[in-house]
Image 1: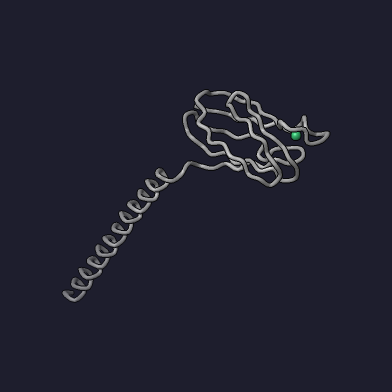
Image 2: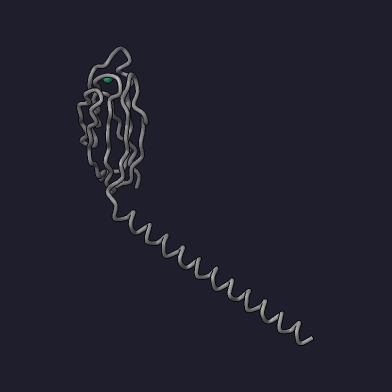
Length: 135
Ligand SMILES: [Cu+2]
C-alpha cells in the first residue's frame, strides 16, 4: 500500500510540474504577443496599394478610420491614369508603372467619391473610386 501511495505522490508531483510548465508557457506566450502588438503600434503607417487599369481601380473602394494616417500607393498598370478625390485633397497624376503615393489622415467622416482624372479610353468615365471614412 505504501508503495502505491508513493507512486501516487510522484504522479501528482509530475502533474503539478507539468501544470507549472504549461502556465509558464502561457505567460511567455502572452508576453510575446503583447510585445508583438507594441512593436506593430510603433511600426510605420499602414500602406494600401491601389492599382489603376482600364477601366477600374482595384480595389475600387477603401475604408479608412477618421484621424488614422495611412499611406496610399497608386500604380497605373497599363497606361497613364490619374486619381482625384476632391473631398480629401487627393489629386495625383499616375504615369504608367510609376507608383505615386499620398499620406492621408482623414479628419471628416463620410463617403468621398473619386475618379480617374486623365482620359484613358472610352471606359474612362467608369473609373470611379470611393474612400469611406468611418469614426
Ligand atoms: Cu481614365
